[in-house]
Image 1 (cartoon, rainbow, N blue to C red):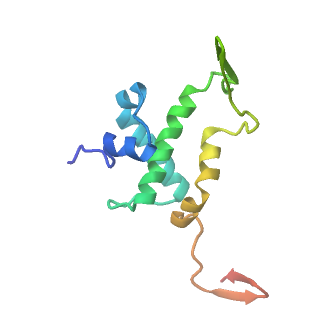
Image 2: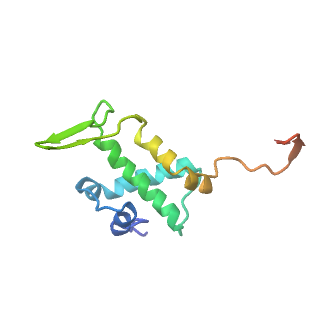
Image 3: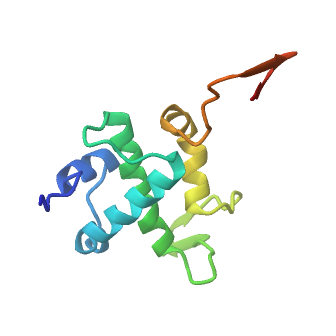
Length: 134
């Protein structure tokens, strides 16, 4: 049995475009399992052993969502403003969607490309411009 993860930590960091946080590094296998389960549920597929790079990127971004969710405050809110002496950062909080909802919105094209959630119609009748299964 192979204990190597389907994406190494180095590949994950490259796909995310940043270094893994200490929490991500410590909990890498668990976060990756959660990301795989979420992505398979979202796409209604079992991830293939050889993955195209855009599907790997989708998995990496799903992995990143887990850290984002864990960094939210307990009431689900996000930090709105930070100020240190004369330096201030204010976050755009106009979209209060969950990190997973934002992930789906931002990656909708790739999700649609690989999604098998819609059943394929093998036979049916055409009424107007709609196909109805028999």
